[in-house]
Amino acid sequence: MQNVFKREDCDEFIKRINQLKNDSQPVWGKMSVDQMLAHCNVTYEMAYDNIHAKPNVFVRFLLKALAKKAVVGDTPYAKNIKTAPQFIIKGDKNFDLEKNRLINYIDKTQSLGENEFEGKESLSFGKLTSKEWNNMFAKHLDHHLTQFGV
Image 1: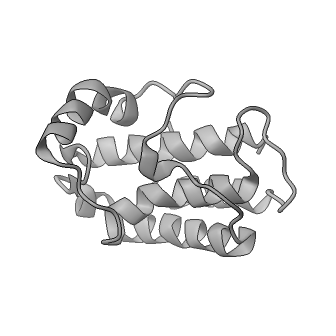
Image 2: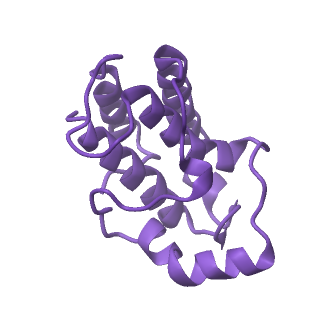
């Protein structure tokens, strides 16, 4: 698995993102390319920006019990898996804005480094290791970039 804390791996993600065009079509799934970029940004918004509500105790318990291993583990995501409601992007988004936001989030994550994420709390899953953060970020990016053939 790629490492979002290594510059060369981040450069590879950014290279793939830069291959996308505003009319790129998915190999599978229903999202448009601008929606996919906005969707990928949600993971970073949850880590950095205070714009998403923290799930209540019961929902967090369910997420930890049912989804955490799949999200932060080593196994890649399957095609066409269900997503959480806050990750569903409706309507058109600004392709260039979302693309630049994603690249900036990737750069920020790499710059902050692994130590910043060790024990950092996730809105949905509680405290995660830097490896779990890496898995979540890297798997999600790779999944959706592959979805769009880059």
